[in-house]
Length: 627
Image 1 (cartoon, rainbow, N blue to C red):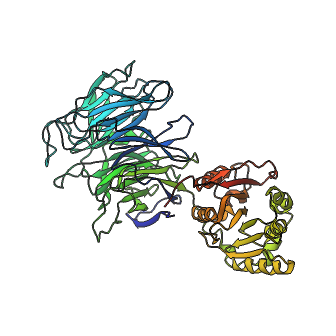
Image 2 (cartoon, rainbow, N blue to C red):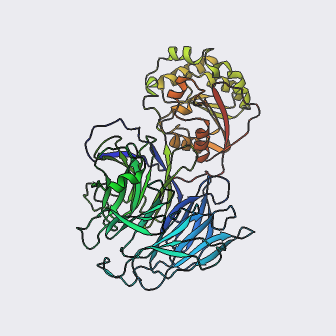
Image 3 (spheres, helix red, strand yellow):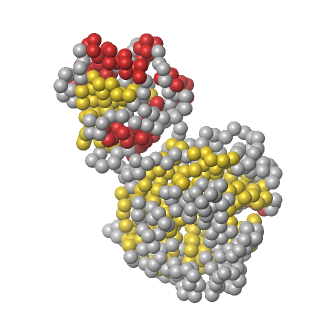
């Protein structure tokens, strides 16, 4: 298993401001090591109607969805459209309550003469996917987005080719402009003739766009990045389109100019920033942000004033190819997520790449200032990336798909364990902890017999007591498994293990073996135990993913995992629990299931007031594959 941890690598500017929230760690999960030769686009949608967001990708010849939470791979279509598929967006197009997809295909750069194909994918009554053509005559169809740009209460499909008809390099800024099209969904979506209007036709090399209601008028504006810079397109109530230039892009480089990716984020009291990669397919991460700290009622108010300063926040970035904005650390500011498609040159001051990075704005600081964090360096030749909450814990994950790496990855947004939580166990006072742990004030001590009874232990079993502490449950488990069994007392504190070994010898428990663990491993031999038991230990795991992986390896096929821990519930739990415990029961369950375990009902569960009791079984194969 390889887990990619976030590492802060540099300060991008110096400023004094409010204290930022602690940046989370991201745990990498390889959903698919080879989705296709090129994984062009990624999105999320509830494909199977179970109210969980699934991951969907478009490769050169397929549309694939990965089912949450097992991430089992399903084909929507394969080898059914004109190659290459290049862009995809979900929406219930036919109004049947199920997700459909708009799909752009026929991607053949630099062919700027022959039309691409546009279609939507829907399901028939039996659930079989069907392909429905949408009429289009434009070449180099490249990006599509759903949004209500007309203010009708229904979403339109906005389509942006990359190049104008007949244009050619190296000066892609000459010749016919790109026609940005807005399609209405007709009453009969199966009809090829969708009503369409042109929103813009004079700009060149439109690489990406975002639809967002910036002025609060109920209509989405189009923010786009192109050869001439960064622009905002707005359809007024009269139906006329207006164009406003937000930024110039990079006009100094050759041969490519302008801007490439684009997203709008927010920071400091509703101030907007517009993030881009510059120039087209460029090497700079650029942000346009207000020069003052005026509080605006809507994001667009600051953009309309035009007092935006262009700031290069990172370079070099070889072939930047994805930008997303999301509040990943819960501080109210949107972080900037950036994907890099190619490696930087040897000796570059930036991370080698390719990869995924997060730029965290310092709250309340003007001019806007960022700190870079590495999420993935070398394992993701990023073609597309986005952020979405995949497990319902309120923290957005990062999803990315690769070109040269061909892969699909999820980077799970994990809270950090208090770095000082295990300080008392570096050299613990054993006598003092016996008084603390084996006390009538401790719920698990009072209910110890009920807990052990609920484990269903039998003579001869091998059980690991992980986080054994003073050995309370080690002793009780040893009695149940008997001399033919085995009890591994596992702990990170050597003094606890010395105490347990001495106590076991006095009691004649030859079946007790002590094991010194680390912060990321139980150090148990592979396939050595039938059950692993943790009591008020899980919240102490500094690296839960690695520790759970070592537990998974140590368990025999079908082996059990029992976790007892403080039940952290906002508004109900004690102040101690709220400050001391990083995650509640629901998150613990998700983390354990993701590590390859299946929940098991336990009718003899002890009735706790402060703790929960969870039982799991090792899956035949892990629920998710991580490397």
